[in-house]
Amino acid sequence: MTPPLPHREGQGGGSSLLFPFFLARRYLFSRKSHHTINIISGISLCGVALATAALVVTLSVFNGFRDMVASFFTAFDPELKVTLAEGKTIAADDPALAALRNYEGIDIYTEVLEDQALIVGNERQWVITIKGVDDNFERQADLDQLLYGDGEFVLHADVLEYGVIGIRLAAQLGLGTTYEGALPIYAPRRGERVNMSNPMQSFNQDELYSPGVVFAVNQNQYDANYIITSIGFARRLFDQQGMVSAVELRLKPGTNLRRAQSDIKALLGDRFLVEDRYEQQADTFRIMQVEKFIAYLFLAFILLIASFNIIGSLSMLMIDKRADVQTLRSLGANDQQISRIFLLEGWLISGFGALLGIAAGLLLCWLQMRYGFVKLGQSEGTFVVDAYPVSVQASDLLLTFVTVLVVSLIAVWFPVRRMTRNLLA
Image (cartoon, rainbow, N blue to C red; front, side, top):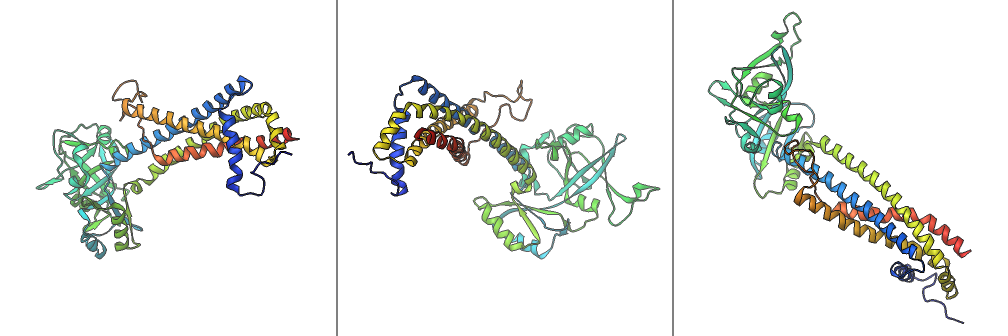
């Protein structure tokens, strides 16, 4: 009697997979008796590869848009922003803020007072945000790359107060990079009810003048709503003398951001929030993350459909190898081992398809980054960037590869076990 195969049920899990894996690999690369099986296997592999490449490219494009938006915020938002956890304003000489000033990792400490105000002109009214800042704000925000116009960034001079307007707000007001005369600004007086007979008496009024420049962050929430001016002007307008709504921090070169953020949180306690640039724009990035996740789910579903092609390939392979299966059973292979052969065969097709798709996706991403052949618009300058931005992340590649293996296992597990049971019946 022919001795049984060495890999039998009851042996270690690792060794029990070697025999099915060896045969699955042989079946994948060997020539079949029917050439059609090779063609169908190739189509299955290409389908998985195509879906995998689409997943890599799509996730990388979402990463590219995220990085692009982050670069816009980087030019305007501070490295760290300190605000109250509850309430709007706090005294600038609060002991906690006084201790913060002495933190050795801080390079620039900027006091900010921000609130909403009203512009009245041309028989129209606009609710805007006044951001009053210290004189060092220009170094804090690297404004050189944001300013447009023939003037310069100035907050005040002698008795004049200047206001740097967002470029879209200037367009809404019918202004250019400079405006003639004073721009009237109104804000409700603190603790007073609106006098309905003469509403303007219930408002503080002041004026801003043009320094000859506007700013453009390429984000509507700033460009269409903000006016940057001195903190002294904001304190008078809002009746908030000696108060701040936030403190913006720029760290010294070489300072670890995460460590500094953790140290400042410990220094200030639970009364304050200490947010980095991403946390300051959490809503925007959360929306982008949700969009990316939804796109991932859609493509994973397409990948699942593509994986069903593997079932046809495996079913034809089982029919082709029916004689081999009977021989293996005669040599001592059990039903579980035979089932694993075809399951591993499906996994190998998916695995090679995933590797091929990831390679193709990386090639397409590199070509897009290098040459930008997929454009956002018909003509240059229509959008902020001319071509779709791309950013490849290793975590996305790992997620894609794992997704392919899991989806393919889900797709072939039940059909293969059912077909194997019928084959061995």
